[in-house]
View 1 (cartoon, rainbow, N blue to C red):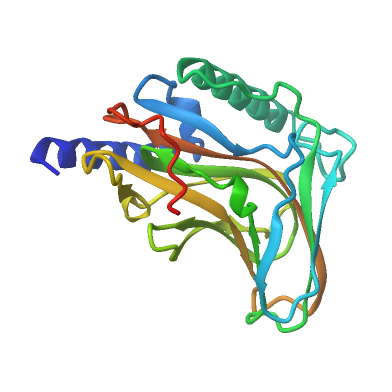
View 2: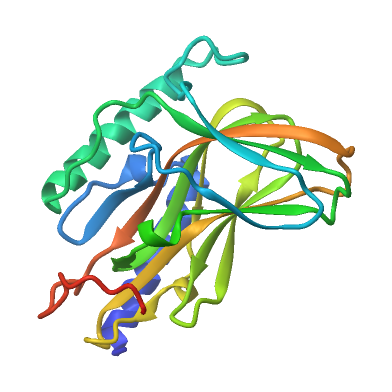
Length: 252
């Protein structure tokens, strides 16, 4: 990587830090372009059932529910700003999809719910992953990851799971569930999540695999649940176009 590339990434990083510090909504302050892609990792409208994989001492299940951040019937909703934020984000995602020649679902009616039992808080955890056949490589460097979560005032933590080219998991903490109602969580993604493309070493890429829920030692043992929706990533696509970039690479 040359000096100019490093300087560009440093500027992007500190810009992101400044925007996070200001209002914790990075995408509100940026516009999609050929070099900035805002994309949906899963909005649960295609009903792709994620898989319960690694766990420790937990009996868990997943299900789809007809509730989203736009549903005013949920307990403790009462925040018009959330609805405005959700709709604004959908507009930006639609704009980015158009620029990058993708289609997205305009209907946002469902989310996914995890119901788990933590018998040993502080030790137990649950991994939820996208089915292997539905995981894919994304070209570019991820700047931030976000998701909408309906919390029920638990301290359990949520991590995004990325994987490298030898299938090692790279966790990035998104936040915890110590709040009630819907909330948009967003965090910067470290550059270590990116890898060099095998066809063109100048191009970065990454793969998102799913989530890991880690129980908090100060919580009581028992059942808990949370909803999650609209898992998205903001990607720096500078230098993404190259000969063969449209060929799928499943690392097989």
